[in-house]
Image: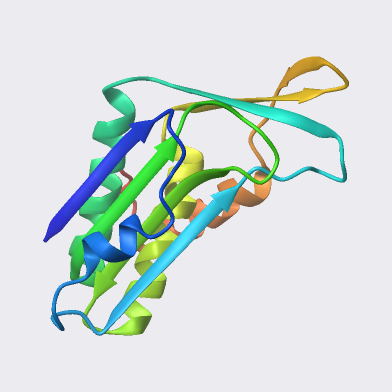
Length: 157
């Protein structure tokens, strides 16, 4: 399986994951998720993300390994931005290729849900000229917990 994991400040290239995962018919499906900065009803002026270098990439690799073992992936692409972004900017790309579509859908959802709660990223929003740290959402924790319960407690660390 081929794997691409990166953390970068530069804008993400929209077609890069599809091109990189293309495998001349080995995979029957490529599923991609793209996350963007929301304006939160016009409140958010900017978003700033920080991470723990080295640890973040290692943990993303572990999450991908767990998904590949469970869904027999042919490829995985995870690229996350850090730094300051504005409304509509792309923050994260998660894409996977697999022989069958359901495996690709499930693996992509698993990687994104577990990434949101386990990878060491910290987020703050600029609202009314003031930076505010963003608290983790309970809905994200519940989504990750559901996947991890299915994997019998084999949580990526």
